[in-house]
Image (tube, rainbow, N blue to C red; front, side, top):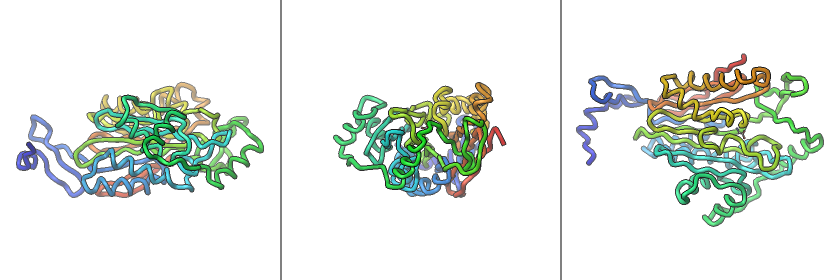
Length: 338
Ligand code: GLY
């Protein structure tokens, strides 16, 4: 049974977190909880929704689902959910995954016509013996569980797709301070669109449990059927409740190649800080092919079990949002190339 006196004897509440007694010692470790972090500036609004739950002793799993549903429903966000840019054939196909403190996880890939893929991913986790459902199967599962079929291609996204069709140039654009990378010239020029892609969110709740969620419409004008890192457990998201959690954004193929988020968590297991763990994963991508890396953006975001957090990316321009009892802030990530 929960013993409040014993609990208070081994923990102290600070204004913005907890000092927990290190087992078998008389020393205390500071734990910054609850806290939620997420990728990009749009993470701020998503964090606010997650914070509503976390600040009232809610579960990290519920918080990350509620949080990422904000950009999923935002028609002005062209890289997640409703209003996401379509593939080259005009289909908005969504990828998402979710993972909790007990290594339960669920994922959907290439899901069409469902505004909240993250909630379908959660149901895959909770209602099936499987981890991943893809394409039509994922859609059938969603419809059988009460989700409504909706057109996710907004007039604005359709217009952007039709403009793209005029040239139909298959050149994934990456977000580097609004600049556009030209594979032909191997350089950046001003005026690129904001291709922010994924929202990845990590939360540590008041009970000290970690969860994460990740959701995207993927690379704009991708090949039909292309799946990125975001719905792949270990690539776009990984949670280990003993150590920490990580998520990624950017060119998914490069993240999958190194099973990026899992690598970041394993780097933290070896003792690296969240920022250094992310940097080490970026280093793995850059050193594999330094020339190619000049035209790539990948960003990692990580949180340790004590609520400390950090990020690192290849190119300047990756931001992340933090919400805790002591701060609500957007940070610019350090980058490999300046
Ligand atoms: N990181 C998102 C994607 O590559 O689809």
